[in-house]
Length: 393
Ligand SMILES: [Fe+2]
Picture 1 (tube, rainbow, N blue to C red):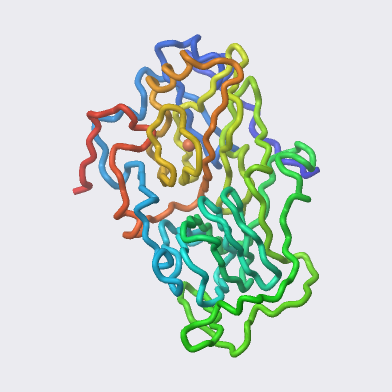
Picture 2: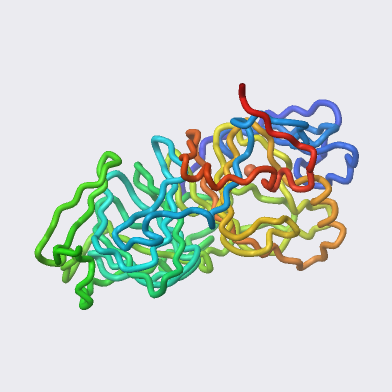
């Protein structure tokens, strides 16, 4: 077992506080619990008990505000053109997030020399045809294509939606603690491909050549072959593409204390993590709280992609994308929390499936994703009709 460094055990309490942070908020009915954290949710933190909801600002300047995007409005070129590609949404020097809505077999093979690609399948079925062998895909799959692996995507139908996380550093599995080798997932459930020569003969351009489109330093350039470059008959080693489905991720939870999203991490590098918040029972012990406090995750931006479910009573359509930049508070409005808790019964389940990406360096939105921005619909602002957004000048 890997030993974690000793954290600070010196905690101070001043003024009105809960005995146990994150539990029994009814003991301070007139105050709102608010958290400020470093190093995600792993470093030093403090809980503040304040009179007003910190998300209830009167107005906010545009560049500080939460971002909320309608992912259904995104139109990558691969939506209508087999020779097209994904669209970039957000980026920093470590990681970028893309969307592909590929509707037809690729007319080229792809190879990313800039980084690993982690595909999350939101909609559609088909095959990642890789040089290590075919990987069938379905909704809820993560398909990890390591840097340099040649592949092409062969959808079974025209409706497909992939969220892609491109990582400059090598992606690995997150270490979320000492829960045994089979939690939160059994490593034997990784789908690892076996080579199979392509019988369709696709992946060719109009001239009948097999292009390999190589992404390097952000640019795309192709090498052209007179034979299918995906021609492997065998492989051995510990570098390979694979997939795992979110249904095989068995969320770790506690009945008595709400765990922060880092407990749902599945992939990580030193500069970001990818996690999944998946359906699970709500905490139901007498003084437990089903929702996190308002918070400022001061060392990370928080990206979310809404894959499935009803988001409790919050009006979040599937395919919604949000970015919470560090600095401004976020959290579920008190009225929504109170109404939900009034009708909640032991055994009730959260039915949402949300993919999260928390990044150490700030994420910069592209003009393409900004064009799909919705205002006033971020979950922190639900029901707050009076909040205004003003420009920075
Ligand atoms: Fe958060």
